[in-house]
Length: 104
Image (tube, rainbow, N blue to C red; front, side, top):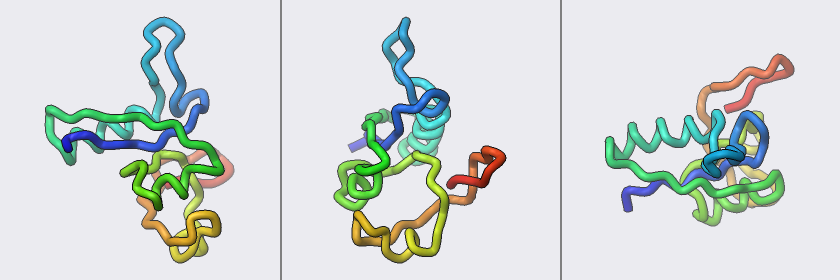
C-alpha cells in the first residue's frame, strides 16, 4: 500500500533512464509522481514499470499496474473492448498534444 504502480514507455521524453543518475525521467514519470502525490499524499511512492505497445493494456487489465501513462489515443473501441486485453478502459482528458493528434 502507499505505492502507485505506473506503466510507462521506454521512450525519450516520456520515460528514459538518465545516464548520470540512473533514475527514470520524463513526462510520464512526472505525471506518475503528480498523481501519486495527489492520491497518496506527501509520503507517496511510485513504482515505474516499463510496458510496451503490446503489453500496456494487458498489464492494466491484469492489475500489474495501477495507471497507464502511455499517451494512447482515445477510441470508442478502447472504451468498450480493447482487442488484446478483452476489456474496456477509462481515459483521461487529453494532456499531451503532438501536432498530429492528442493523447490521454
